[in-house]
Image 1 (cartoon, rainbow, N blue to C red):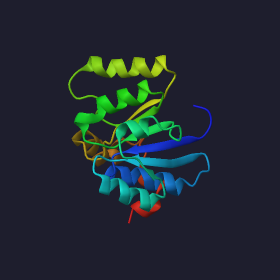
Image 2 (image 1 turned 135 degrees about the horizontal axis):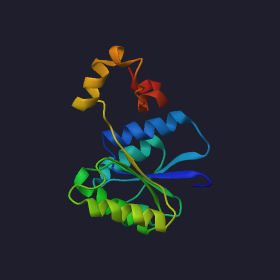
Image 3 (image 1 turned 90 degrees about the vertical axis):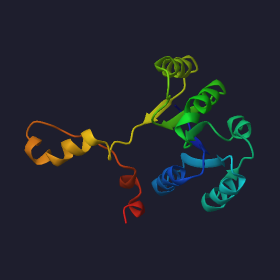
Length: 164
């Protein structure tokens, strides 16, 4: 993906704020929060003021905006597939928390094929910190150290103010 990354946030709740804070603290002239849409206009308005971005009044508005080339989907899981599909169909890169789809593996494959066909980025973030298997490995990390490497990224690493 060449050029500036101009992010449109879809959803304006807690996850959206965490992501927007990370982008803000990254402080790059090439990674920009550019807009927000939330089905609750009050949430969009508050987010818009807090992060200094345009508030869109509809999903179509943010997806059709030439000021946005990437969407970050931060909405309830049941809406991920449809929003990501619309974004990819309209030429937007898509960043989505997991799960990408809820009910059918074929829908996930469809989104991957669509992103490949349109030469777009499709990124699915997986938060594992509270999963039982991750916690089990973490609890035995000292014993496993010579044999294993646990690789993890944390949004707080990019945004120290979120750690407090």
